[in-house]
Image 1: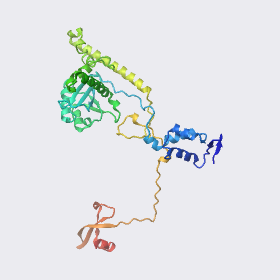
Image 2: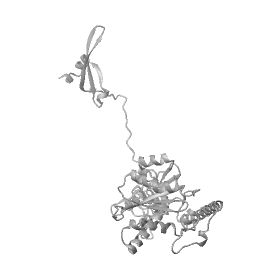
Image 3: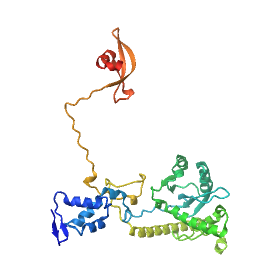
Image 4: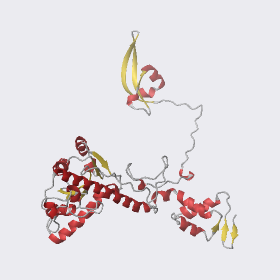
Length: 396
């Protein structure tokens, strides 16, 4: 029995699992509905007291199997930012994704294939039909990407069925390109394509409002505008990173750009631009990592830890949540006791076939028997006379 504390609260002794019963009732009962640590503690505090009550409530809630499986995670995502490596040269490593759900144009286009160079940030926006075959997409890829930039070393994309298909994998394998897929439910892996798509969608909305008509009529100019506009990650326009200088437009011209460049000078200028781009990308990655890591916690898992997971077996660390073990989660099966006098009797089920075997000029009738709980492939040949004596019902 408990004792009164301050005339209102009951002091609960640690006997006969009394504290645990109170915690179970306050958390698991239908009228409680699995409250969190703070709510449960505040619910119990006016009526009960024991020295480690707050700690016991927190531990009980943390180990509740139902809460661990269904409740949302409110802590900062696990795992620090791990940026992709910076490519060494233009269009060596690329990313790709699709923009879908667009209105169908007169040319039957209803999607855009977005392909972006990870170094220069230059991009191609290719209008496609969502129902285009893989053969058609492969032909478009070769004519618009390989023709202009050569074969890339690697491609980062999401797990779109087009990219994970055997045909696409075989094509890229034949070209010598490695495929890297983003982890399930973690589009940040291919954040470059996602961000480019956001910019493209903004441009499309503005273009449709200003110029009307089919969006694929304006897509080439959208691509030009994107590639010729300043990009903060590389501190210049993608065209400038790709060609060494920005492309001319009615509002952007360069008198110096009209002069003839000698071969060595052009090569030197291009190499210098690439070095600047790589430094800017590294600085941008460091800046982004520093900002993101402020709002994240380092991964605390070790090999062998139990975690809850409801997604594809390739996943990002931020999708994990630590599992809190408790003896009540283990369902103990009663031990099976086997008696030493126990015997097992095989019972024949049916006769499948008959045969006659000769032994020392004597014919012996045989029957092929299928036994209970065994398949026909496990049937055995037995002497018919012995089977008639032991199991006469088989021959009735």
